[in-house]
Length: 303
Image (cartoon, rainbow, N blue to C red):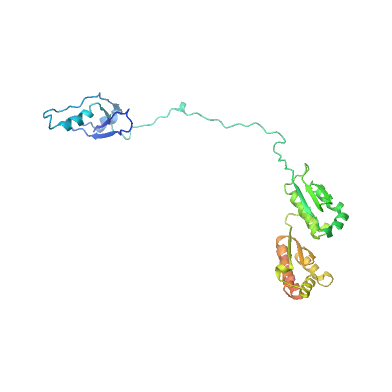
């Protein structure tokens, strides 16, 4: 069946007026019914446009049909368009012209220069303060301090006596981006009281850290009680401190009420737990037994 779609356009040039679309299905008496096979063979689209026709106005009774005449007179300039479309679902094909598809080639970039990939480090400076009681030792060991900083890390080092600090900065020979931080940790470890041979391990190993705390952070002690706690940590001739260092594979500096530990994260935790037990009043024998158990477990894990 041929479906007639009547599109009524009301003055398209005037804005604000919507389209009124009315679909009217023709009766068999007006248009013959086309067979599906005939419609499939034709496979065409026919668009017929009819010219504008003025609407018929009935003027039997002027007085009675006055309102109707005004309504029909307002639609006398309307253009009617009739579009006849053959309904065909299976025979439509979409053809795409190959010339319309433009092929894009891969982007090409020029070759980089030999030194373009190398990243240049920005010049940075660190200033590490030195306590007054460590000024004399650092003057004696100055050759052993600036040697590793310049040879291993490629940093520039100088001692500022007026400000009582060590200044280090990066240079063209600095290759590692973390060299400045390692150098600062090395100087800081020496300023806290560690030996140069122990502090130089911070430059060669990546998993070493510094941990500092005070006795009052664990328990508030005063007078003789504080002195006895410090004595329990150090032991006779430093025996307890050396035992904790060997069992936990760390280095400990006992500076009055401050305690500094250098080692890996796990080893620092073992040494700190032993020191905390001594501060809280545990006898050294009990702490030794716990350290022997921990050290045996560490050996088994290493195997």
